[in-house]
Length: 232
Image (cartoon, rainbow, N blue to C red; front, side, top):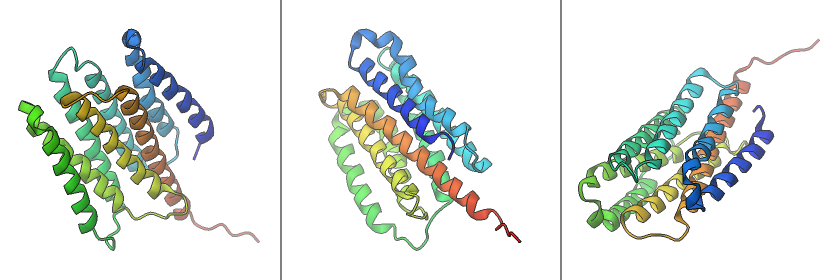
């Protein structure tokens, strides 16, 4: 994997600056820049990696959809319709992640237990939010369904544990769910102290973990696919 250590240092600085800006409402006019730099830096890192074309295409599409969603949600306070637009941009990102994860499905791993756990969570969070959703009930329900499907496929991946890619991707998917849950509760139910910091911090790390996990897995597969070299 190319440039991982310098990228992680740069990402840590970018995310820290974004969290500082989030904590200062007066800096909101410049926040669109720092916000986009979080996923934008991951996007550039992925472009520099030597991984399979399909994997790189799917991952970059997911990150682009996330960037579009970040822009829409940033301005959703001024333009209410952008909230649903942002919701479906991230839904599209999750669909692309599902496609990527399904390419490495381990058919020997049972899905019933995680499906029951995720379904229980989905029903609980939707029930908790339902009396405040109004016309957004259907879009939110669809989004929750797709998000938890993405987590299920992250769990069902067939990957070597030696390079930690499986753990990174599953942890990232679960953190994505946590970030979205805090965002939804804050928007529709009740304010959570410092929610902006929690949402963006967890979301940024979630995207980072999933991207690194996918790149590590794809890099390992390329190395395995190379023919052995013989020396005389």
